[in-house]
Image (cartoon, rainbow, N blue to C red; front, top):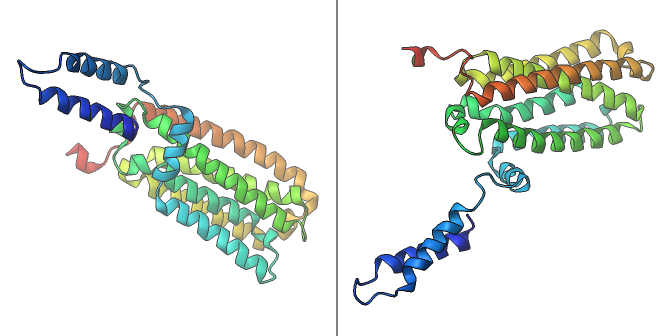
Length: 255
């Protein structure tokens, strides 16, 4: 309900309850009924644009702060002369970590059961948050690939960043769904951190695998990772629709 409409409804209610039985305005009950009917006629679910705009504000400062930290790290590497293309995998996994911290927060905070009973339920909120964060991640990855195009192939850097990003997202959803509710975000962040660390180790041990000549292999890996991430995201939404009733519960709840 908009603030103006809320105030109008409150004013109508005040006017109705302040009426004297014998000298009251006969039109006030009708105005009250019309105001309540107009409110009941409003759609139960907000529009998609309204939901997305709301999630920009409610995602949480931690997730946005992690995104800003990743961007600032990339800018510092670029300005210091370090070839930022070498950090493509770590950047992609770090962005997935930042997004998972926002998407899985409702379960780790114990809000999944309450959201599942609302008109805008847990799957809708998770989808809205994921769309907002994925758009932010796509923008960061695109800018990162542009910054890296001076020293490396643009499409090769995109593939090297997208594949770890999607693997980290899928692994994060899988881990967050399998653990107890309170540890969901921690498990998701830990899984994304493990993917980031694996990218750093692989870059140090086998730098030839990150050459532009291996771009086709990286794109195949990105397609496979996209399938994995989509399957895990779907499983997350299906579990969220029933408030993760099949997921493990904490020992405190069992007792």
